[in-house]
Length: 159
Image (cartoon, rainbow, N blue to C red; front, side, top):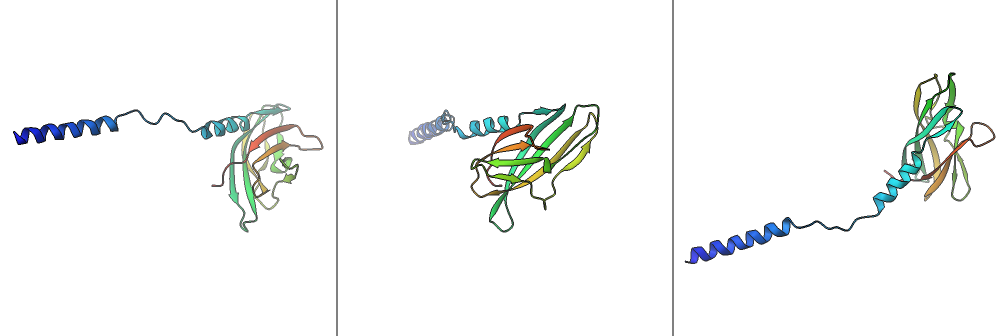
């Protein structure tokens, strides 16, 4: 009789534990990933200038060696849909921070620059030294005096 009671008690505990473990997960959701997806979607918008498609492929933030500034790496995909070669480089881009400070590419970094043959694509990286704490900026394609394309970017967290 005692063994029967222990078996029933043990089975009850096992059933209760199983039901708790198989219950519904927490249904609350974190809103942050949706914001990041929206920001990434906004960044990845393709801009076309003279049959050249330009798209930000990736943004990456690291700290500079001296720790005084942050380095933003902007990876671009550029496709030449024209019939002639097209020359482009990191120096054709600049960043404007929310505080209206213009930041040019770091001339000492290994920024992209090449001539893209007709129908070909170039993927390259440009590097910008940003003031610490910069959260938003506008990436501007300006090969000459006038801006020809702009992207609103949210600066990612440091890696």
